[in-house]
Each structure stands twice: as structure tokens, then as C-alpha cells.
Image (tube, rainbow, N blue to C red; front, side, top):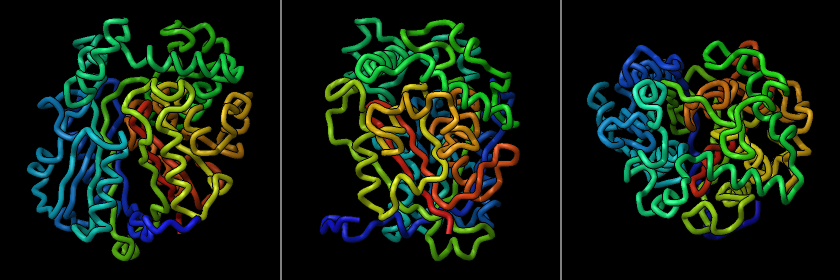
Length: 401
């Protein structure tokens, strides 16, 4: 790792993941958002070998959102009260590197000595919301806190009513610039579906063929229905602990080796390149903070809110050449469970369900700990989880000791 006097101490190396938990994943669930959250959080605390009284920090993203919006129905102040936690630090807010912001902020709190064990969670109930309003996920319905009215006002007059419209621009440009084909893009959806068939929590488990994919409804050219993630109701939680405290726990240590959270461009999705996004800033930052290389990664859980985002993350994290993601995923063998780089082994968000960020981290830890059941890949020590799209992005490089 190149010496940089600005970063003489890499804070995340003092932090480990000591426990994980996840509620049921429903489409929709009959449980309330708070019940789902408690199920995930209590499971994570127990998994870490801790008691509620040990938790002295709490964080989520994006926090309290519009007094119970389905995108973030349970904020840290509500959960702290319900669980009776006494914390030295809590955090929750929209600004930051996207869905993994709670983890990155919680790790900083631990590394600076504010707390020892931080409970980080992400709850979402968009499946229930869509039962009563089919436009519940439209950008025009978002709150000021989530998507910034100032930003979106420049898009909605041109009928950019969904993130699918924005992502389609990136996919179309990728096709044009690098020769990417629909059949190559399809491999992300097909791989996720194959993995989801072995995940009992996945919401989309029916077999999918290339013909099924190509025959699915076009949503925003060139993105088809199976290129878009599926809404669900779920909560996912992890416990972050100081490394010395985590060594006393029941699980093998999973250290946070490096993080990426950089945003070296304007806060807009189209000002630099229609084939990059902030993911490339994130990747450069993460690899600058470790001696490990992309070739060391044994599994990758990469954001698939839309299939093109997984392709972009593959390139941004140096897991394949710039512009080469189409060729890398072609045929699906390289990214399959028995391939050189298994991806989204729980079915991702395209088939597993839109758990939005922490689901990737939960799966990365499950794989590193050898807990993934039928979908378990070959033993490995290094995994990466990345989440976000457009200007919001974060990545975590994990090492099992």
C-alpha cells in the first residue's frame, strides 16, 4: 500500500463484524416494520455473543425518514427506545456513501473510542407500501430527505419518474461504448436467480432461462423487467465491535480491512461519465487502504438495484477490466457459485429481495463463516460488499482471520 501521510492510520482496521441477523424477507410480510427490525437486531446481538446491555452504539441509513416512510420506517431513535438501549453514540441520516453509510459511520465511532459495540441495521417495507400504492417507489414521491427535491426537479419534467430511466441511460451507453449485449447483461439476472433458488428466504425462486429474460417486458430500454430489483419487507442487522472485543466472541473474526466512500465528482448522476458513477471513486479509495489486490477476492456481493449496476461495480472495483464486464460475465461461468468470482450468492436484490445494502454484507459474512447452506461457495478468506448507485456508493473489503 502506497504511503500517504494523510492516512497514517487506517481506522477501519480496528473494527470487526462480530454478529449478523436478518428477519424474514416477505413480499409483503405480515409483520410490522418494528417487529422485523427487532427480529434482525436481536438475532445479530445473540450471534455476536452479546447482551443488549453490551450495545453502546446504534446506526442505520437513512435514519428516521418522513415519519415512517416505507424506504426507512424505523430510525435509530425509535429502535433505541423500543430496545431500551443506553448508547454513547447514535447515527442515522441520508447524507453519506449510500446504504453502507451506517456501517462506515459506526466503524468510525468505534475507532475513535466513542463505543465498543455498534448495532447497525437497515429496514425497508416497500412491498407493503406498493400493496396500497403502485407509485410508492416513484422518484416523484420521494421525500426531501431521501432524494433532494432540488436535484430531482431537473429530471422529472423530462419524465424521469423512476431510477430505471436513469439506469437505462448508463446501460445504453455501456452497450454503445463497449459493445455490451443484452445476452451479457442477462447473466447478472440469471446468476442471481440461480443463486436465489438455493436461498430459502429469496422472494423470486422460480427457474429463469435466457428466453425468459429476453421475453420479459421492456421497462426502459435496454432494461427489462428482470433487470430491476424486487421490492420486499425485511430488516438486516450487523454488530460492529472493536477488534479486541470481537476476539472474545463465538465467531471467527471478520475484520474490516478497507473501506471505500469517496465522491470525487459533482453530486449528480450524469456530469462525468455515463459509464462510471461514484463507484470508481469508491474502488480507488478502498484499494488505496490495503495491500490486498482484486485477485485476492473470493466472493463479491455487488449492488444490483439494476443489473447494469453490478457490471459497473465489477469494473469500478477492478474485478474485471474497465469496459470489460460484458465479456467477463458472458456465459455466466466466471460469476457462478463455482466460478472464479461468485457474485450475489443469496440472489442479490434482483431475486433475493431489495434488502438495500446490508443484505450484501450479511451474505458476505455468511459466506466467510461457511454458513450459507446449499449456496455456500468454496472456502475463502477475502470478500467484498458494495452498495449504491449514481453519486452514492460505499464498499467494504472483509477478511476472515
